[in-house]
Length: 187
Image (cartoon, rainbow, N blue to C red; front, side, top):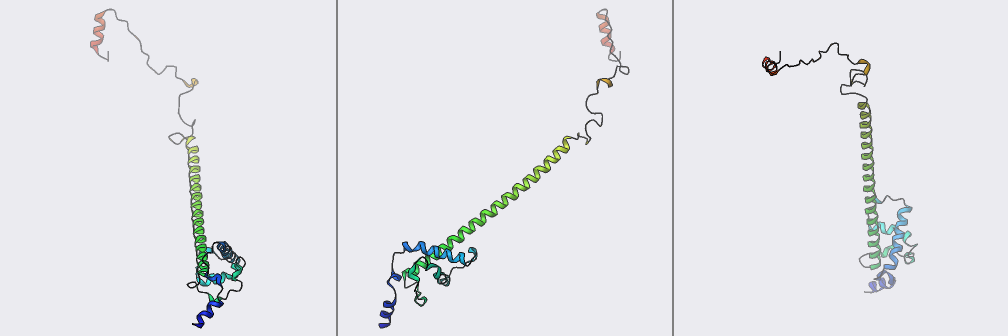
């Protein structure tokens, strides 16, 4: 039992504190500093206890209690402060990874939307080009004015030389009207 009492006497009391709210912000800043300093790609980070231990030098800047912390005493099961630090760093990394994933998806969506707009613009330009070409062509594919399209001009009108003109015959009486009807259309 003397070993256990010796271990407790060398273990700082803060390692078994239950309230960590005032220190968590510093732990998060320390974790962020470590990630930035080592230029770590957040989506490639795999969380582990070793990662938290590696972050301790950065965390010490914000929580001076870890300045003389002996790594040999690292035990997240026994010490609530170490467990809280471990959980805080794990949560921070998870949140950063979720945020990075969200941003990546937004970027992919933005790129797809830009490509869709580009395709739509190209399509509308082609339709506009085709519309301009077809508006200068008639149904037969000729340009206007290149064939006998539309009404003839006043200079080119026929004077009636080749057309038969209708002449009315006066009827003298009802018998002649009746006789005209009986004859039929050939006369």
